[in-house]
Length: 153
Image (cartoon, rainbow, N blue to C red; front, side):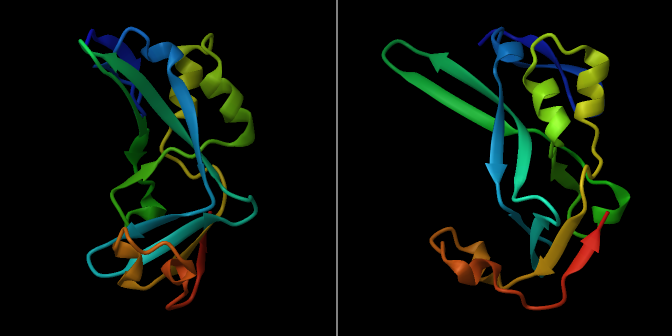
């Protein structure tokens, strides 16, 4: 795989993705996410939006007789008001930033701003059961509240 310089969330370039990397931006959407701290899992969701849109990257690797598509959600250091939950967060995009992220002509300055590790919208944080920690569990019990919801802005 050939390397290409890309901007990471804190504005430093790193050699991590193939030459197609700049054209390989994508979006990942979800209505909420679950984070597990030392003992307590949390359901985190946008307070006023139907879901998150996360910055993502994808790449295609071609071998002798196979093609492998892969993707990753871009993460950054958690802002101060989220560090009690986890040290890192996925980079959620505002509506305006979605287009900036997908625009291959966006400047490095614009991308650095888009990839800043800040909350772009208020989020609700609700403690949930450890039931969510088993990947076989896919039902509503995964987000059943076990405590009070707090809002972080």
